[in-house]
Image: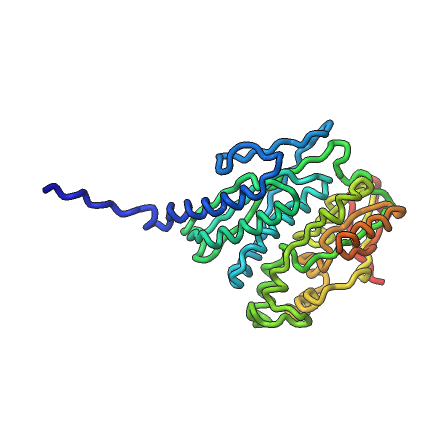
Length: 354
């Protein structure tokens, strides 16, 4: 009787990449993707590329694209065992990045890279991504899940995404309408958003010796609740008033000064009134616990302001009321002034203490 040939070992699995696990993750993710499809979606779920049609009614549509990630906030998610919130963070961050150009989101792509893929964790992440997409009537057009055991430690992953939006060419925001006398309207953040976590984690977990389930100082919440607060989307607050906004700055890495300057034309300066909005307790705790200077706090963190709109003085009330209807606190945080430099000089942002 002839013996059956000896089964060869699965060399790829032995090297750390389990294809069966990847297939299970893809199956779960496909169900979540189907739940985000809008009437603009085209093609089949699971194709090599995602397809979405440009909406009708545009005369000169311009596509606006952006790619970003959630950084080391994923390490807090791993510590807490909560993975859906960073997925929603990723979408909201990306929506804000194209909102500053006046764009409406059309489609999203996510990228999850990990050492050893756990289908349940991948499903949680994409659950958050899908939730964020549905909230913005946007198709999750596809993505990629990569296993790289030689690159990532067990239990660790990285999360990034790309967004595509559309805006009428003559309605796109470039900052060219900004003029002296314009007012700066700050929109409240929901905490750290997705920036400054390398420093925040060191302060909270190493220097303050707090655990993930410990109460967070000056707060009724735990450390996990404070550090995993979802990055706020400003679409509902700003979309109704985009036509009267002169410029928008999403306050991400680099703080207020590092991001506001990106949307200012030459010949002007932005002057921020440092005492015009209340710092949430989170930032006071980090400043004290890490012995961080005020200047460094301004460079690293948003300090409670996640978006700044530059608007005409006559339109301030309209903008603030739009924010109130979306349940987003907003304040006048400064103004635009003529630059003391030559008209061709680069714009600057400075803080004034009053």
